[in-house]
Length: 299
Ligand SMILES: [Zn+2]
Image (tube, rainbow, N blue to C red; front, side):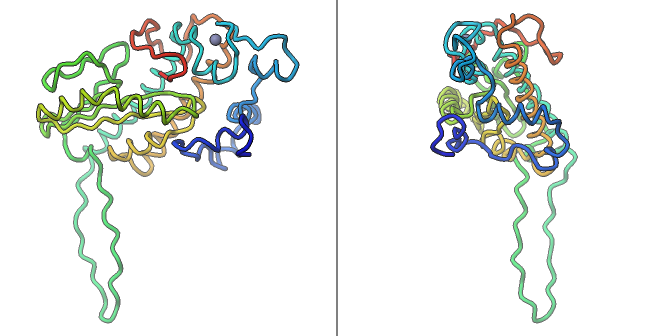
């Protein structure tokens, strides 16, 4: 499998969490969806490039830009799709779900008391059991005044009391009382390029982070990646855990985020040759966003 460049591409996804679907979910799933998912993940959907390879189409061209229409091109590298805001629409849709999950976690952390130290009594002659340390409760438990700003509809302005910048991260989480700031940047990327996206986004905020430090703020910059086909980058799980999203909350948040990504990508796939006018899923992010990356970088 590892030797197959297309169907075996997943064996080279090092920054991707492999758990994607449980047996229980698979049992309940509709066969059409399972068929789509398998073709989607192994890159054997009838894309123009595949149809051409299989001898079923005269040309491998993308209907939007006339370049080679592979699945990767359609979902993340088409310059016309990028310019029309298709990838931005998917990005903002996933960002909204991620932000909702963090809001829920903030509310949840306010209701949680800090874990108490307990004393374990041991019977005479018994050996002391090694106690597992309490899991650290995460960043959200370190303050009660966390505020989350999300860059949806071009709303975000980096807090001027921390530092002045023209950069606009996707999310900024701040606690005034403890002088903490967390910069979160989401990228929905082709699975093979998750690592590259992570490094690029980290580099983008190095300077801003050091300015925050210099102004006396404890800062964390966490680029978060989700694969186009609904696979979580390790960075997604790591960041949610860092914030203190754990257990059921973590499972729920991850499932919602991955489901949203896959649904949005599926929509981009279905509409691959159609004009981009009415936007689905009830969410209408702006299409003329100034922060468009280059095709293939992931937005
Ligand atoms: Zn194209």
